[in-house]
Image (cartoon, rainbow, N blue to C red; front, side, top):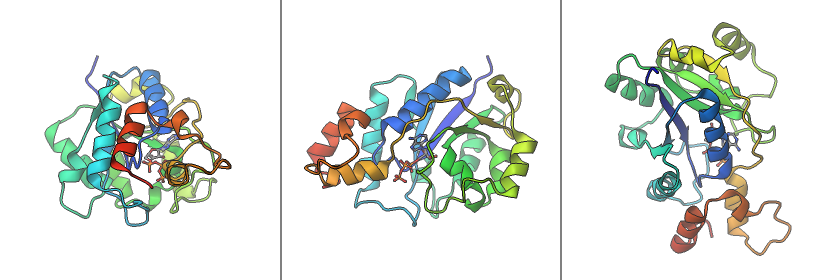
Length: 224
Ligand code: ATP
């Protein structure tokens, strides 16, 4: 089997079962072994809720400690600012010549792809693996659910139907997963953590955060 590097970038503020459940289902759908969770610098349009990079990294490390398929990939945090996925993937490419590289993203990220810095370069560096995500979790920059003509064309040109095709080239293909839907976001969890006595909160943090992450959040008094 050709070695394949799989990476999943996110703010992970905090990392939740939507990230991990979708990513692990995807990993097994693809038939690959390991996935690097890659905390990103927080883009200016996103709320940090006062949470430092250090805390996001610590939470990601705790998620990885309990599942040997996951490891923290911290490369983006060590690169010069401003930080962009394309620059991060270029840095990773320099270390590994021609191995297939799969970059995982949720459907909302896919829908906003053409707003990403130098987005046409991404497919020269990696394959994109797009995980299903319920509508309603669109990022603030996301386009309408109807795909733009640019994305429709990109899909026509680069979509592959079988994961095995991702192993035949280092980059340039897009695979849409069959992963189950996980109806949760970090925003909802930050809100629920900030208002623990609010019974009307639609979301139960225990359902969506791992015990180790909850322990860390409580110990450090995050999101209060
Ligand atoms: P926020 O609510 O703060 O915007 P988020 O829950 O969307 O956060 P991020 O860390 O910003 O999480 O997302 C990182 C990546 O994970 C993105 O590509 C996003 O689409 C994907 N993702 C996040 N949650 C899910 C989910 N429930 N299902 C599938 N993909 C997800």
